[in-house]
Picture 1: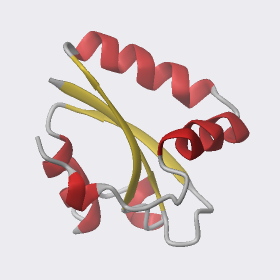
Picture 2 (picture 1 turned 90 degrees about the vertical axis):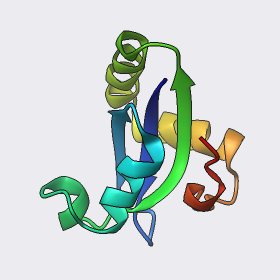
Picture 3 (picture 1 turned 180 degrees about the vertical axis):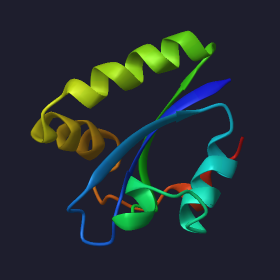
Picture 4 (picture 1 turned 60 degrees about the vertical axis):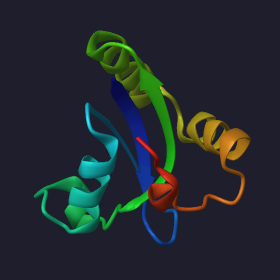
Amino acid sequence: MSYIYILTNKTRTVLYIGVTNDLKRRVWEHKQKMLEGFTKEYRTDRLVYYEQFDNIAKAIEREKQLKKWHRPWKEHLINKWNPQWNDLYDGICL
């Protein structure tokens, strides 16, 4: 399985889109600030959206698509699936 995911920070001012083959581990790494770069600098550690794919190529394709979207489109996607923008990390059962 592969996943695309969207993280945000406490104030919802930043959105980060990533791809992984292990969603729980990858989000945990973000939460622990183990990964240098954008997510550590902007404290994006709240999982607000994700999609599951059968293969990595489709996940990467979707990640690239979402990265091209304007912010309001991304917010609409999140709002449809997670209107309270709750951190979904604890609910991941993979």
